[in-house]
Image (cartoon, rainbow, N blue to C red):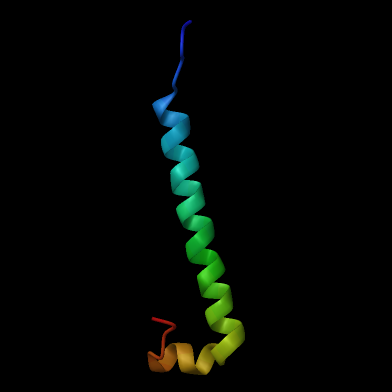
Length: 45
């Protein structure tokens, strides 16, 4: 049984997932506090 694992595709999938999570948190931050509090430095974390 031969197992072909493409490291490039796996790395691309992981980077895409991380980017989606960061964008999702950014959207939640904007909708919760608005852009003004984002500029003031009041973040979710």
